[in-house]
Length: 342
Length: 242
Image 1: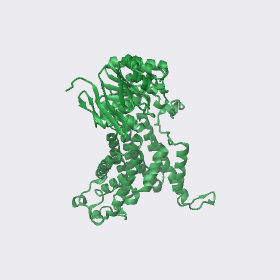
Image 2: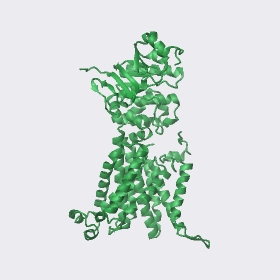
Image 3: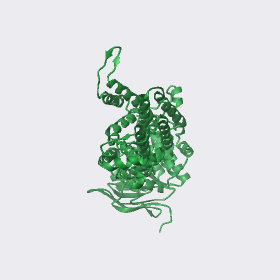
């Protein structure tokens, strides 16, 4: 289903509403809201590829990582860079581009890496392509872990300017939403969704499936890259472990639970799982309800998310949104336009 | 050498390991004619369509579109060059709407959605435009497959059993629609079909395949009278039900 303007408006309002706790509460709730926006940018970026092509990617955290570190090379103060990142070329050490310059560099590099790895990925079909993206993630993780002079390796890189607040993160999330909606509504998006349904028929219809998938992969890598840059400059610290399996599976769970074939699904999934994960995290820390002390339950968040994922896959395999896009007539009309297939 | 518009397959042979799927099959289609390709199941009809549409590289022989060699060209470029096929298994974009099924293909040519609506009207599906393709009846799905193929404005259309699953009445209507189509658009049509009534009534020429070889060619009347065809294919099968 194409993304209409009203869908984008509804999703934008939903995103703004979700950030409200960040303005009302404490520093902790603000951090939560920022992190939610960071994840949202990631999941929207991931959905540009996954929703339109139907091919799952396990490798997008690598693009967040590449963009986060390459942005940091241009935003960390030169003095700090000299000490922590001695292997950087002198001209990079001497250059400070600020957040937006750094983000542009990060997104561009993520897109470039997306182009190179994408050429191989789009030649593979189905699960083979997904496995290749997972291998790419492992390669980037291992490389960054050992490139100590460029990334601080397994130690944390500190000194990133803390320039991303909630308004900035929200603005980037809305921009990502706009990019994803425009892409989905474009003829390229439509041709890709056709190939998602039947690759052979798409090819017989003159659709250049591989080339278009590559376009989606590169754009998707760039947007996910923006998420990595936001994350680094929201918490001021980067470590390679931030962009590995935990992030991969959390963001995939968000997309699958929301509905992996629609933009609405990506947005709803990211917001819903962010709130649920935060709630579970608080519960796991142990709380007292009406004088009854609930003990600490480490790992509750992970177990809870796994249970939710299982439940959704069994009861509602098309995700919360049923892979449809939001639209007002559907809600006002009591679901008369509800379409079920197969 | 050829400036005349034609789709020409010469000496096509396809081998899968030791199995010969096609051997020395030649066929030429020119604009404005309907050529029927018939034969029993496994005779190589679909393999031949695969060869013409770029899905199967022939072991021997050449495929030329108005003189231009199509061999080795990827299937999506063959389709854009003007040779478009449908599938025996229909293969619609199931979860997309009927209108989107056609619009996605029209987009290949950079055409707007409005032209897709007109195409749907020509096959009588305009009222179903907003349904998902999977929700269509079987015969409507086959109509949509043809509309989708036409969205590329093909010069040559290869239909793989378009009447399968249709009632005799629907097949009759389809036959009339195909004749109109060829007359209006001046395209060349290759019809692979088991419905003999349809084949005999719309095709000007027939080619009969049996285990990968051409055993007869000619007008429907000639082919019907051919003893080799009767023995290999028509023999024993009640007329019109095969």
